[in-house]
Length: 325
Ligand code: GDP
Ligand code: CA
Image (cartoon, rainbow, N blue to C red; front, side):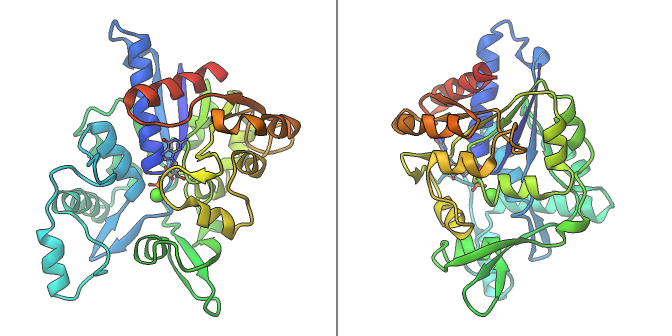
């Protein structure tokens, strides 16, 4: 079975870790890796050049989480991290003082940047970097073109990189919209369209609908490939009981005029029959009353627990998504 997952960073990573666990459980003979192939198509809109390094936050969040090298307590980055290099950069007044890169994390960025400088694409660099770990999931950047997400803020049409808005301003500066730089000439990276066309199941992770999944869907050719895919497309709501579970996705939804609710995000993605994305949408038990609204929009609503508290609850959620397919 070929499973393709559209994913952002932290929410996507937790979901992918659950999906991998669920498949390993259902194949206790150890054949989980051979009978099921998981491919993640990952948002690259948060990527940027900083202090001479190419940073790819969502690819790295997924890699660290699947490798078991992530910091569970802090919720992002590497476990056992130190910040000596960032302190030095700050002393030189280089980079963003409010954006700390850990030393181990900088190792990843150096590796990636060196490969890009050698002429490899981001796809090739990601393949080499992820080969170090036993991930059990193939990570594909959605595009090899530098399509960075910028935020249009109140101040006279000023824009800033998404990371500045998110990390420096904690999304507290009102966003009027999001711009994908150079998106019109971007192309899906090698393997991405095939992963969609050849999938048996396509899952939309409970990731930020605007700046993670929305960015993936914005790359020319992706929506068309999804519309033509023979696989069912099942999405998982990142919204539970009218709020985001982690992070500040509500500020992103507000900027594009979508209410922070499971049914509003479903309507935003749209039903496949109506030219949109979804065949089915998993919502939490707390949102069961919204099922009828979702069904009325032509999307099957499946009510299951959506909290990914730990690996078992994430695995159960992934199993429920597969069952819906
Ligand atoms: P980012 O790129 O690191 O911001 O991460 P993603 O875009 O992949 O995911 C962010 C989204 O994950 C947030 O909008 C959260 O609402 C959602 N999320 C985080 N944890 C959970 C969870 O346990 N359950 C569900 N359903 N959604 C979650
Ligand atoms: Ca992200």
